[in-house]
Amino acid sequence: MIILVTGGGGPTGQAVSEHFRERGHTVIAVDRDDVDLLDRAAVQDLAARIEKEHGGVDGVVHLVGGWRGGKSFAETSLDDWDLLHDLLIRTLQHVSLAFEPHLRRSPDGRFVIVSAKAAERPTAGGAAYSAAKAAAEAWTLSLADALRGTGSAATILVVKALVNDAMRAANPEGRFPGFTDVRDLARAIGELYERPAGDVNGIRWDLTQ
Ligand SMILES: NC(=O)c1ccc[n+]([C@@H]2O[C@H](COP(=O)([O-])OP(=O)(O)OC[C@H]3O[C@@H](n4cnc5c(N)ncnc54)[C@H](OP(=O)(O)O)[C@@H]3O)[C@@H](O)[C@H]2O)c1
Image 1 (cartoon, rainbow, N blue to C red):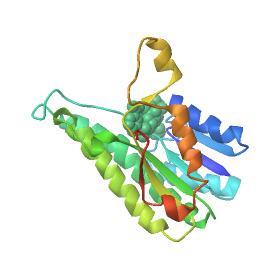
Image 2: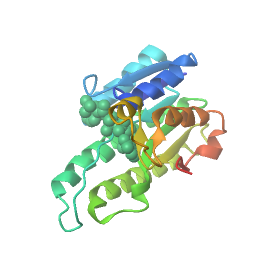
Image 3: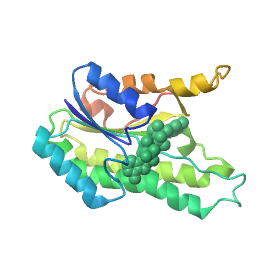
């Protein structure tokens, strides 16, 4: 399969890329240095280039993230909202709009975002982050509706937080309760291909349970 990992340069992207490469798939991992996902034309070009070079795409794992929050609801910075809107919503819009036609053509495609428990349980200081993740989820469910019956699926994975080896090395005493290891996240994304598209399309899969 041809798997695109957007926001793929960090530890999470590396774990997801490794998972699919180890199983013999072609992974195209892109980061900001390769393509600015806030540039819609550049994302469209990326989709056209992948179509030309690989004949299509079977998976898009969208991993762009970021967090901002305040001490209280009243202190929420709307500059934080602007930033989170770009990171969590606008990049998703560009990627999903560019790749939906390609996923429709794949016999067994998957589109994945990683959302946060905070979207369903917002805290006073986390209004901007929670609302941005909730919007990203709603957008992804619209994509799922577009993919219904095509053989492809869009899925929301839900975590409280992610943990990787570098975080563990930096804090050897840390317990990271309720965190999802990036390797377990990668395995869960792989499992989406073991279930029929219709069973995983438009679902929120809570990895904390
Ligand atoms: N980390 C957590 O605890 C947690 C919790 C809940 C949900 N999630 C979600 O899980 C996913 C992965 O999380 P993460 O912490 O590994 O993500 P991340 O490090 O915050 O973001 C992943 C990558 O996205 C890239 N990126 C940002 N803006 C971009 C742009 N305009 N164009 C291209 N690339 C861009 C970043 O590159 P640069 O470094 O070059 O900016 C970064 O390497 C995200 O969707 C996040 O929202 C994470």
